[in-house]
Image (cartoon, rainbow, N blue to C red):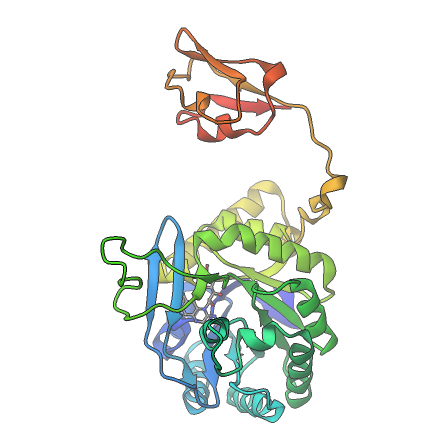
Length: 387
Ligand SMILES: Cc1cc2nc3c(=O)[nH]c(=O)nc-3n(C[C@H](O)[C@H](O)[C@H](O)COP(=O)(O)O)c2cc1C
């Protein structure tokens, strides 16, 4: 069990808002696979334009989504009402936005979904596909999504209006495309938010086909800056979660690039109470949910963590200002039996601490700067760094 915003989650796994949560069939799949919660597909009073799923996928890099079909309010209400009939104790975050700053519009969407059975309202202050590209091109675009997410005053007002309109918790899912993420999170907290969610969404563009520069996204004419997910989002996700966990009073949901149970544990150790998964589920399927949860449970049993809560924020004490960090002395050590003399460790442009003697790497400890690149790149793991 994990306690979040007064609700008991059977585990910290939340299926992120996406095509994975746009149909009752997939909500059932999420429940059957063992997820504790889902965030239903972004719901509007009426979506400003009808998108169709188009995304860039590269398993070594990440995903970028710039077009997807969202839900109009009647569709969102129907999804929650029907889904709730078949999904037992699955907890429903309902991901909403409104394409204008009119607070009553936001409140109406939230109330309708609460009446349909939502457990938590998730204010979408993250989606860049509505208007950020338009605005960056100097054009007018609808509001909603990342636009209020870039404006702490508006984010606070919307959060307050949502809190006043429903009796269930309100979580704000924030865009990373801001100068100070903490300022927006604290504004949402001041508006009464019960939790903050961060998960990828850096503005991104895919590479074009350099032989056909007009082709950027598959099956799409034109390119808009989309929302980054998958592996490329993970290290930035850790930084967002750790900052917020240090500065906010409310709990944090973290995501972006989770593919394995280790990644999920790392998010929790940086301070996430719950974690979200999207791209890896779209790429590798529902069976990854039990695999990931079993991995965490095995790890907790082996390492003596009594419950999920014991993982939360374990590494947060290590997060400090740069001037408070103390470099430790350390030297790379070569295992001569493993070294294959390939010379990979001789390549780093800034290093003159390594030579090959009789086809075995030799380290001059006095010349070593301590970057650790030789150990990271060694193809046979013959180099370790010892304190
Ligand atoms: C196809 C697609 C559609 C998405 N739709 C939504 C959405 O409707 N609302 C939302 O808040 N996030 C949406 N996201 C973002 C995901 O919920 C998630 O935050 C992001 O992809 C990062 O997590 P990941 O690295 O596990 O994919 C979408 C992502 C993808 C790939």
